[in-house]
Image 1 (cartoon, rainbow, N blue to C red):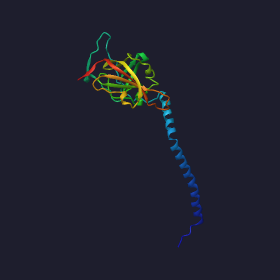
Image 2: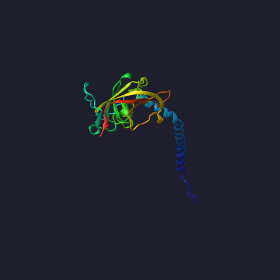
Image 3: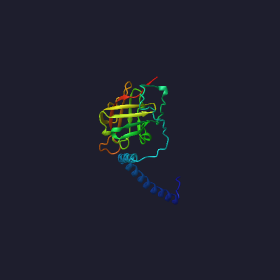
Image 4: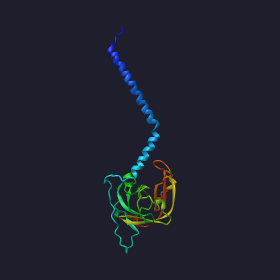
Length: 228
């Protein structure tokens, strides 16, 4: 025997049906719009990030500064070596040195152990965990709209100086080139011979983050080498 449904209950069910279907249809349309606009939103987000990076950010004072100006008088001769036990090694993110490139107007820019946004917004960052005097390739990068904005003007023979607490290091430019950021041949790493590679972004009419980098190659000239 079939149960009769009260007419008021039928009216309520019909009302819910007519209310639910339009809402579900609207949500489906919104989802499809977001899916089709994904690439546009991605480009827009990149543009916003670039706009933000052109302005100083308040990232707090959570980066340690262990840099102490090296005390070497002009008449003194800097030692050729330094014991590793005498060096205060920087932790990740620490400011540990200053970098100068007189030929492009860069003087005493802070040099950090690390190339995360909180370091690059403040100065130049070493991205591969190598340090002056260690005897291997050092990679140091900075933004092309701040500390390395004039890096394209650097020329062969120019001198770059890094002043760490444990010594003063000099490097000389040998060449430079542009390449994609993931082109590993553009940044050969040596673990037996000290050298320096500076890099920054290169704009080529792209919208958002650019995949191109300017790489500058430098030979080691002077500065105390680490010994045990």
